[in-house]
Image (cartoon, rainbow, N blue to C red; front, side):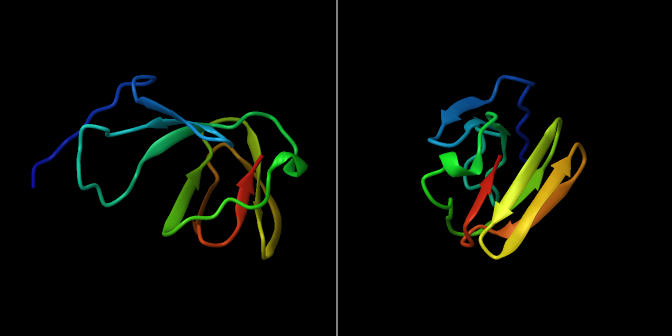
Length: 97
């Protein structure tokens, strides 16, 4: 009760993966119900992924700037622009380009 974590722009903890560069937000809080982060997506092709990304839980995607394409293993690719969002089961294969 009464917890707060402020992350100034660009001051989140860096965390790079094979696919994306993440900036972890609210890093000072432990036992978070969600794992908030900002991701920078490099321009690339779907064929450059080594299969689908998948993990437990759900994922919420909100486009801050630019245009992306969300691929999921059961649906047609969806083009998304600034202000668009998607909430999906992350156990389903997914990639974002």
